[in-house]
Image (cartoon, rainbow, N blue to C red; front, side, top):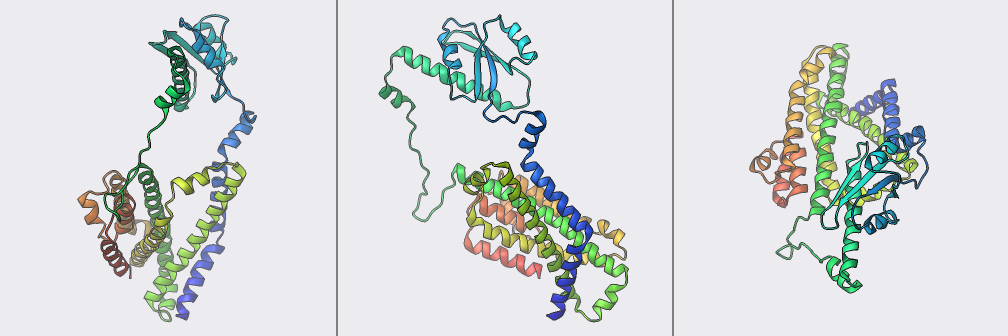
Amino acid sequence: MNNFWITVAHTAGKRLKSKAFMWSTIIICVIVIGLMNIENIVNVFSGNDEKGEKTTVAVVSEIENSELAEMLISFEESEFDYLKYTDGDTNSAKEAAEEGTFDFVLALSGDILHLEAELFGAGTDFMLGQHVRMDIQRMKETLVTNELGLNQEELAMIYNPITFRELPLTENGEVKTEESHMQSYWMVYGLVFAIYMIIILFGSMIATEVATEKSSRVMELIVSSVNPVTQMFGKIIGIGISGFVNILCIVAAAIVGYKISGADYLDTMLRDVIDLSLLGYAILLIILGYILYGGVAAMLGALVSRAEEVNQALQPLIFLAMIAFFISMFGLNVPEATFIKVLSYIPFFTPQLLFLRMGMTTVPTWEIFVILSILIVSAF
């Protein structure tokens, strides 16, 4: 056991102290912080750092009832600043927008029953047009209800939403709602991608570590004093520790970036995206998948005589990881397919597909136990 911990400490220490590890970790952390504050950075360089500034939209109204345009211009709850354009027609308003007087031009035509709206502007935000359309629709509904003379009670009867719930058929049953489905979807997507990256990056590290010691003849000295199995698990755990430290640094950088950005999307993720009941299974499957693929990577590294041949030797393992990744991506849309259930019993596909089934469907407890047992036995 002493040799095992010596191997773990040597492998992890050498990896953590290397300049490549330090600089790559620092660069990744800086990139993470930068990406989480990309909007603030863009605003600084563009000079658009004034908070509360709204996008201006010039309104050119050609409809008979001008009250709708007036209501739109006085609508303060909108995220846009609607301005009435009185210096000409739509073409002149477009010319003014090209000169920077306005950001967009909104042309209204037709009548209240057949209202036509055209939004002129340049940009890549496809949601902007949807927000403008919703503002116009809201003003139209308000105008029509006012003309019909409906009071507040009658309006409440029209717009008051129904109470709708989805409940299981039996007392201890489960039902999949849209919220829980999307929550599981993104968790499964994130885990599948994480396992794929761990296999590619850490598997290559393990294989390179073994091949380097073999080519430098250090392996002959180690094997004479350390059991090969002990050495293999020591390297897997050591590189796993260095990878865990790397992930912790990235998470810390993400937290720092989140604090600097001043955003509140982390609360939304914890509430609507991350299912805490599945996190335990996610961690367990990541660990078992890493041990399984890491063991195969160490074996492939031992097959080659030079470190330069590692990438070629790792190709079968990378192909397996890619196949599991693509099957998981396809399985997100059909998690109850028979081939997904069958492939989840195969150890190399279990980490991704079992979590996919657990997150997107209901898997019996006995089946989870059997599949995990097969994975554990296969890993060791």
